[in-house]
Length: 100
Image (cartoon, rainbow, N blue to C red; front, side, top):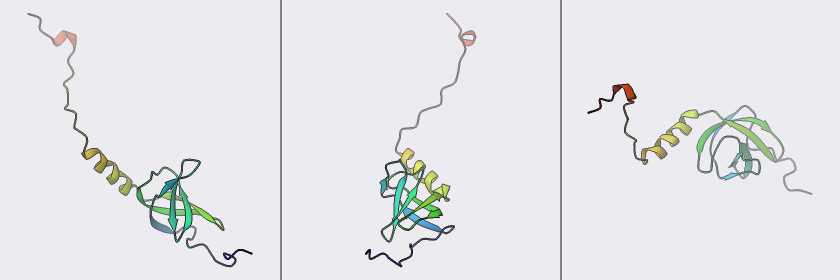
């Protein structure tokens, strides 16, 4: 008999939680944990720290979706700050070039 009998999941459907994506599942979804309880979160990567809303709770796992898109955008901006900025180039047509 399992020790988990009678123990309810640590998350509730419809509630929001701050989580860190720790791994990627077989289907490509991010995996977060709350009190060792697994939550699958699509469209996330390892290391993402996001706010999620729980959409479905099963006995041993749950599913959630990202609600705080600003956190994801901030992460993308931080990653791109290290990249060298490409200068803007003015578009010129052949007709505008003066030949000597």
